[in-house]
Image 1 (tube, rainbow, N blue to C red):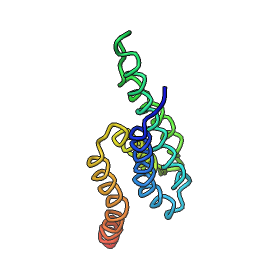
Image 2: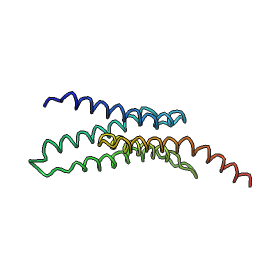
Image 3: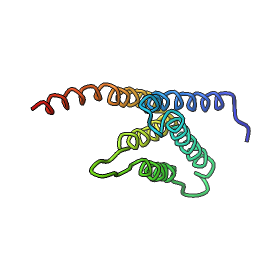
Image 4: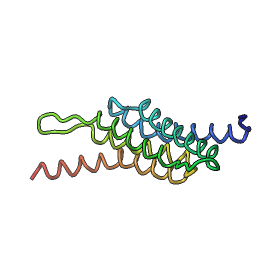
Length: 151
């Protein structure tokens, strides 16, 4: 089946937007020297977008022949990325590390799914909210921590 130019441009736009939005979150993790950084976040976002696009494509092909549920692949993405995220969480002594990176990986999958589904504004707003959370709230946490450590 031949893709039309409009379909090719639409897919290209979705992939590039997913790369940009996932990269915004991934760059923060990279700057903080986390193992799951820029490339990992982009790969998770783009992979999620690809699976959603594929799900929609399969649905379009078979919708008149069989009962097809495009959300099954989306549910699989959430489960699979959850497994990846679990691998970033490490418990050592009294502390746990990797929770924020795991959460950012999970949300990047959601951003990729949203972009592939055409929810561009939601994906952009969530990206900005997550980026602000990672950057802005870190300084607030440090100030709060210093305040309570002095008492």
